[in-house]
Image 1 (cartoon, one colour):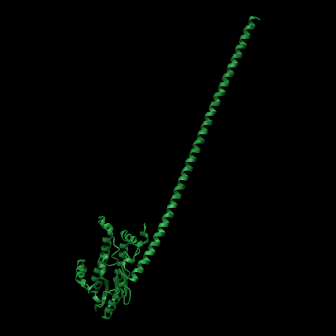
Image 2 (cartoon, rainbow, N blue to C red):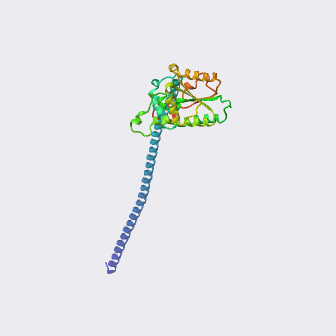
Image 3 (cartoon, rainbow, N blue to C red):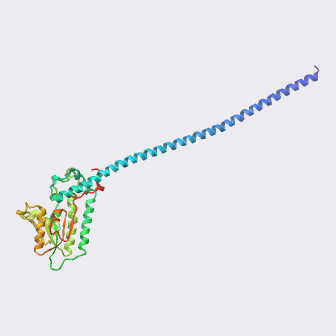
Length: 310
């Protein structure tokens, strides 16, 4: 082979190597392009994972809300059952107390279920609200009428309503536990003084309007001086008459006793304009008067909104 032939062979070989090198470069470029596509796919994959994660979180939140809703519904059912029980206790106690008053039964007949109801009735303020409403009704009535000048129009008031509750209604139903525990605002003290405040207010307003006030008491005549002293200390004076039970009347049923006293007043020419008491025995029977006002008391009235734990 000539020298020129060797030179051409080397050039061809070099060209071939050069072409192979370019071919390798192209292959390398293709591989780099493949890696770029894999990153994009990874990005899409990660985005998919995030989407799935968000969906799972949303599902968990939804399940949590559903569980809470179920719990609330269960709680509502329980509260509904308690409210139903409270409503039943209310109606039961109301009917039972009315039965006691109508039949003049003593404290031993009082239902145990209703004792807690009576305490709540006082503590939660319904007793005070009922007293206020009744006194307002009486004041509104007397604001529309005036006594005649002959002095024969009288208003009967239960003298025992001026005394502490425990002296009157049901002495065995007292609230001494809180007092024994050192309570400074005990339920029994609060109850027996609260009615006195409203009765005093009504008494003074009626007296200021010129009404003749007749006080009737279940207490025996031998306690007259002590009763007068107590009434005066309660800032209640100027009554027209204070009627107390004679010895022979102590065994008489209180309903019959009050009826007899009202009849005697009417026979004497007096006109009974109204009778005011917290007990039915002073308000029922013959000759009750033109208008009757029944003051509430912790025993004869219980309120269903306020029996949450009975």
